[in-house]
Image 1 (tube, one colour):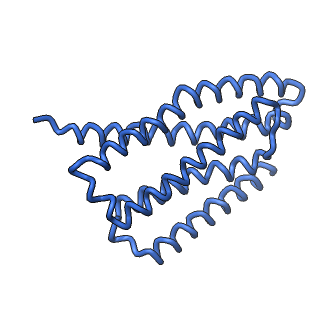
Image 2: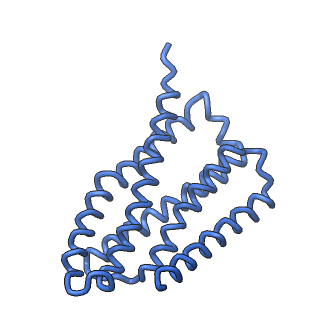
Image 3: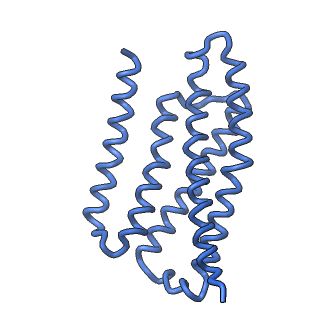
Length: 181
């Protein structure tokens, strides 16, 4: 008999990796778009047009389908007889809460993409660089929650994630300062 749940778990992970790759690259394209006038001067409109084309292809061919398939295969796995008990585990509630927040992050990125298509850039390059690190925080938190499960002490885990976020922010500020020099 074939263990089809193994396939759904594998597909869940594959599409999750694709989804994160799409989110990481999409926000990098937001950065490039936001900084195009500063970096390309009179040719900024040409670069912005190219960035928007790249964004649309990435978003609608990779990121959105990966989101849908990640949630689909994750749900199939979670609601199977073999893994249904996980719905009662506290760490799974934490994971699903962060996945929900990640989906909201995805929708906010979608709005940023639509705004840039309309020629509206509400955020600077540095703000987009910080926004890019939010996806990294989600990846780290969700991975730690799932891998460590009951081993993760809530207080120390929370402190660790906050410190990780602070170090990311300080790294961005250092990078900005080094770029100016």
